[in-house]
Amino acid sequence: MTAGPRTGAVAVIGATGWVGGAVTAAFGRAGRPVVEVARRRRPPDTAGRRFHALDVAAADPAELAALFAEADVDTVVNAAGGWVTGAAENERAHVRLVENLLAACARTPRPPRLVQIGSVHEYGPLPAGTAVDEVRAPNPGSVYARTKLAGAEAVLRATREGAVDGVVLRVVNLCGPGAAAGFLGAAVRLLRAATPDRPAELTVADAHRDYLDVRDLAGAVLAAATAPVTGQVINVGRGEVVPVSRLIDLLVAAAAPPPGAVRRRTAPVDSRGGDWTLADIARAARLLGWRPQVELPASIKDMWNASRTDHLERA
Image (cartoon, rainbow, N blue to C red; front, top):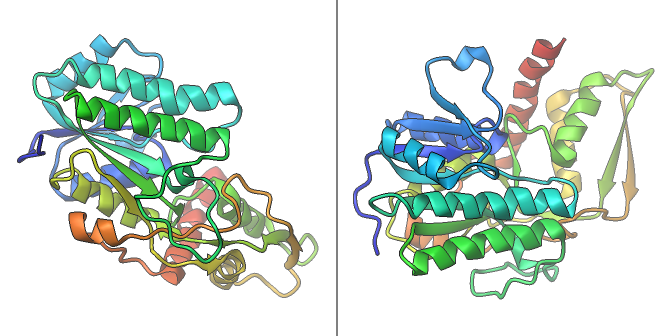
């Protein structure tokens, strides 16, 4: 099975999330009509977009298939899920949702291209100093990683059976405008409230990570939507590793707090992602013609600047 030309609508699952929003914007700029699907509606300032409030993890697959047919959807992007808490919620967000989505896709006249946004953590903890490639056997070490892997394997299995035309992108940690979760999102919130009288206490772990701007991820998804990559697993990252302390340095430089408004301390790594991630992205370059474009200093600066707008809107 090959993708072939696809010019119909793109359904983005989890469209109101940070990643989903970036993906939606990328397809919009490319001129593809987008159907946004999420549990919660976007704010009113995005009126005019085609939006369906639907909990895909709980939906009847027939209802979702009817939505796809009515909107002439031929491409689906699963941008739902994330670092949720508890085994049941991870199962719901990363396995049950994918199963319902696949059941809906199986009811369509032509198998749609399904881009599953997975995680580098599906590989499990990585040896320091190594770059993981796609031939490495997954060995997930957390409930998040195990359920993300289960969802990815379901997509690959359905692709082999001809129900979908699927591709899995295994993505590294993300940064960039709109980031709210994770340690970077927490650091932004602390810095926004920091004063010399009430300094931000930033805890920096001795970890090294591959970080990618969310807009670069959206570019990879856009490429994967039409490339002849059926049944492939493709790593998406910068292909570079940086100390977490370097990210904090960039964030503090962007924030430019007054003297005495920031205190730092080091602590052991306490993360579901381990202390080392680095992706080999040669396959993405070869099969998708994709390489990251946004340098980390620009990504972190844009993240800080975007957070100012969010901060003012909440004030």
